Image 1: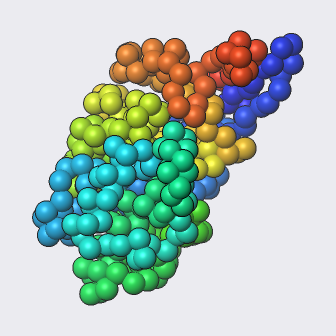
Image 2: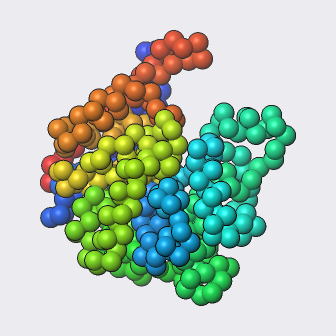
Length: 337
């Protein structure tokens, strides 16, 4: 199903196909497209992947601050306000860049990247968007086995516990979760779209999580995401704006996946754009919200329709002169189930 399209001049230049699943505690409530199709969470699972560290009490073991816990659920864009927290997390826990399995890179936050290049600095692992997640996995692996080595392997103790958490939040049996390797080198988990939406319903409504210990950790983590929304992605990004709203829990992932939960309406939502684009997220989410819960978060909905966030388009497509030359339009209709 076409969820968004882009015009330029008199032509439709791009069409973004995908699907949307919206669930409540009874099951699928709204749909667009083939919601049963399996896709990978990618970084959308980070709030769930961060929970084992809290479950094992590692925040207390290492004396972590709220910010250092929150960033384990986020994707660090590399700007100093985020990287400083990552550096503190690594220093307290004794995790070094040599312990991380991914290759070094520059920050995705372009001003920080160009400033580093101007200073003559090369790529670093601390600037990777997934470094906080890796640090959390190393700590879990170290606690369960005595060593952080091998934390990225699918059969490691850390990744088995993460996979268990994904199963718990999605109701997909452990053995039926589809497995792959994420861009950062750790496992990535594939489930049907409606099951991914269920996981964010449970983040928004932790009383629906079957295990009380995980429910208590989810309450803490979602509260931290609201207290430190800029650590979930960076200042000016969609994830930051979404989590600034106390009634929304949200996280995006690579390859066009986005998921969020609405506390007031008790709804979990996910969307997948098959071309992998992220630029259409903002417009598609606005279209979803105005159909399923326009009164839940009116200020957020207004901003999604009017504010230019980093990396996404709310409506106008502009050329390098600043002139409006086209539009990104999302006008699909959800089917009520």
